[in-house]
Length: 382
Image: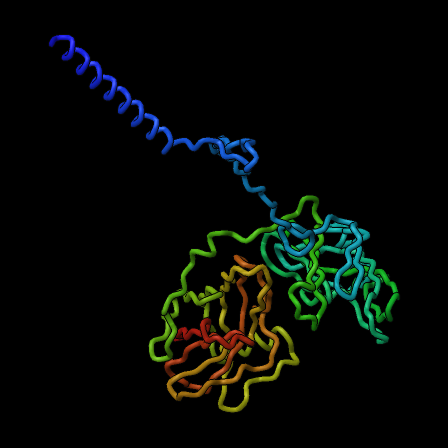
């Protein structure tokens, strides 16, 4: 009886073992397929698992800094060096010699005994220049010292007309066809001891700003625009005719700071005008001259010279008339100057109005300025 029980127990244990093995094999078959055959009993190799490459961090190259290209000779802060042959539009220009101060005045006085000394605080500059016409047309073109200016750290554009002297021979004054060459002296007034002198090749009637070329006359000359100018804000003082600025107030427009320093009216103003030049005409009947001494400062931020002179000013008053400016030569210093950003100048302008006009005010309207952002009214009454 016990023997039968033992046989039965052994049978069930065997069955259980087989069942466990069978389940284990089935599980394995679901996970790993046996090698397949090609139909001829040959086993085909199974695909091996591909090795996965762990992504590696990439080294992103730093961007290469591209230097800002500053073209030489196109600005006051990076002029051509002295004596370099400069190819400006329509002309090749080269500085041959520079004289200044006593040396320049000696040559100027010897050139013409009627030449007058430089104004107080100024001195003469003589520049000998060689030019060659590179025009592509068949016409003859004029070149002289009035096609070339000088500037320095006083931020004034000194022109040939500001010297008003006869230059030594040979003078820079020629009319050249393409390929023609000439050389000669040009004279300019500059401030006594003024530094960073730069020659400005700026052909008249060429209004392309990229046509201007700058040549250093002082070694290492360089002039930049003050960043302080960008912070100056225009004001509403004097914008409207019915609320003009007071005579002692400074007006600040988009590009200019204007202050009235002195006003002389009537017979005294006419005496000043007549004393300057006896060929000046007297006021028309019923009119009188007004001499106004003005301090002007150019506060624009573009690297160019802007002109201010008598043509920028008129007068008006209670009668509601805008009076034309008279065509006379004003007292020295006359307000007729071109200024670079930050440059300032003091000079006289001559305007006119009807005799006895009340509510007299100065009207500032820069010539060729169509924006009206610079127009201002300043009372000339005490």
